[in-house]
Image (cartoon, rainbow, N blue to C red; front, side, top):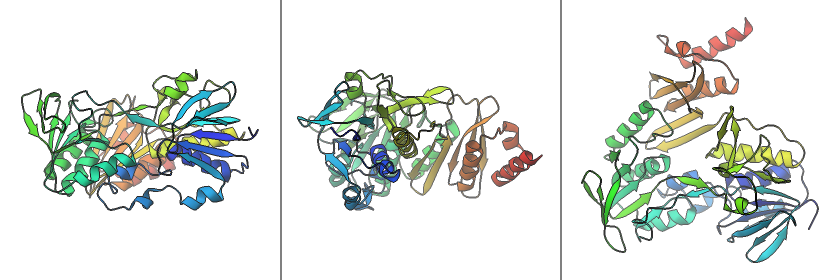
Length: 409
């Protein structure tokens, strides 16, 4: 085992960013990246949008061209599962072979939660977590087909939007009282619901599937209110869970994710974690973020710490979702919000979240200016009160100017 070797388990956005950062920062030792999929590291957000719609070729998904990994001396071990970690000997087992490491990063991501038994194993029920899932769905994604989407979160709604635009008949079933209930305020959810309804999508909120029809393929479902929905294919977007089994088996502390400190360090010496699988303290509360921004930024912070250049990772998270001609941009975390102030703009709207009279998050729907202002204020740690956003004639850029002037007084 080379004394300066680093192994990265997980070849997604976080794993790729971590490996690239190590080289950028001057690390010259061995870097081994292990990924269960046969594809090289690729972007996941376009899977349920541009790639599913056929607007992107497969190669456009790749995070880096093939020559990048060769030129940087980063070894990709793809298409095999890491079966075990031995922290004492600093080895891992993949495909029956042992690999040594001096330092280790876990970027194992998250995986779809198990499907309800009535849906598992059906030939026309699909999940959209990886490239193979989407490639299996694409041949069935034809105009005139009847699509049932289980789950009104971002993945489910993005899939519904692509399907409706492709000419499929789409219905969405969400067991919560409204779509995006866990992640957005009622006003944001209402705007997105109305957008889908304008495109002919039927949304059933506060409903569960009480029964199913069909044998090998699912031909229909019955909801708990007795409504029957016929379908030709089903996409399940029922949420994901962090992939922690490998870490847990090795004795690393986990609780809804691999527990890490502000530097990404786990409970095991010389073992770090980053991305969807990592749970850390943000703003005094535990957080596990599922986003491209977090995957990249936390991975780069971990790479720096592995090389002795660590800095506490305390991000202002941001996310986005593209549906039809609407771009939803989100900055901050809205957990625990107690008030929302909404504003319409020329082409969209924005919703400003407050907790104890302090701005904590902004949802901007086709309102890039509101998003940009909210992001600048939150990143600067400015204390913006509800009254500043509620006043008549509110204009985001004026709020930014007012805040700048107040700092000069």
